[in-house]
Image (cartoon, rainbow, N blue to C red; front, side, top):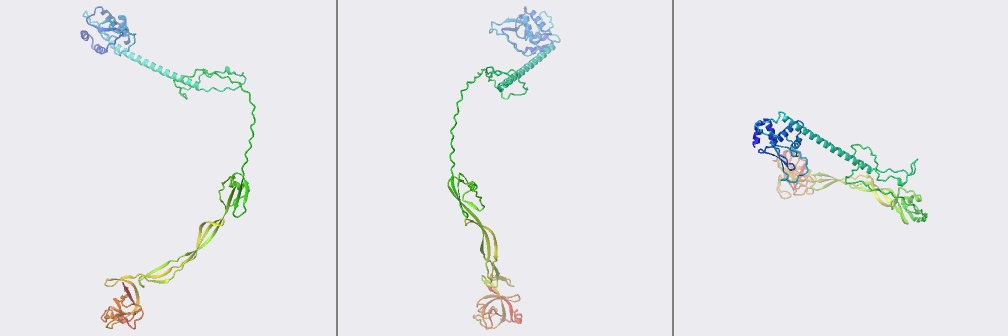
Length: 502
């Protein structure tokens, strides 16, 4: 602590900062030699310390040579001095393990500041020159540049080694995979090469083929695979055995081709019988010289194979047009009217059926019908529809707004009468009755009498008379009826309508 105080008072500001930075660096042990700070024991160390500072301030000393400087002073190898106090060297071998072999130790790049020893005589010697710091910085920069240069050289060496290994592996792979060229039996102009003089297969051609730098081997060779080094022995050809006489093979007679008898049974021509080998029906036709017709209908297909005695029926197809007459039924024309009773039919004309001829194409096989196809049709007589009237009744509304329904209506001639008394049915004669011919209009029939001019309302057929015949009616009409004078003036009306009420 006293040394640090004295150094802080005597050192300049810049030197003090550098010293503080250097003081933070831990000391490194070195093979049993310990360099320590001391304050009390200074006898005999001043000369060594001054010698150390003198060597450290020389321009040709580098940071890595600090240990060498200390070795020249003390005569022993030790680590870099990290304090400015005087040095004391003591042997620590007795207290530590046996000294190991000296190994270079990488030291942290800390600028070395020459230690400052406090003066004893009172006058402080100036050990730090003004340019000491600049020299230390220059030494550190030089060391950094040297390390970069060393690293670059190492990387380049590794890359060169890898390239060399790759090239060697590629050459070995090419040599191992190279096919041995075939040698001709006799080379023109040269003597015959004996088998003993042939180069062994394991001989490696030292001539390297030029390979492009970026060419990769076709098949990578594993590092663990080692080329075969054992020599392969060349087997000498064995002496050829004498050829044995070849015995002629026995002649095998071919088996006889089977033959079959086939009969072609035609429907409309004579049969054909032939002896043939195994063949199809088409080949049989060609063998017997028969040309098939379009009308032929064989029982089997043309690719049928004859494999035994066979009988094949060949039919004949025939096509004919057949005419068939058919009846066309007549229809009905209905006329709805209200002039006949509801539901009653009044036939006007009768119906008559028509006639049609249909033509079919019929296929016959051996005279038997197999299929019928419609071809066309022709009408030879048109049908005539029947016609009749059908009574449907109707309805109407009179002048007073009353609606009546009726089964049918009829137009009849009419006149009037006004005789008082009892009617044929025994009722009083008044404007509610009419006289009729019972043969045409039954007594008791309820009707409505009117036409376009007159409206006599609802009347009942209750009376008869010797002059009332067929469909004629007599309307009982009072002289006080407003329609009497006009109706009586005419006397006889032929357009009077009577409606048979429901």
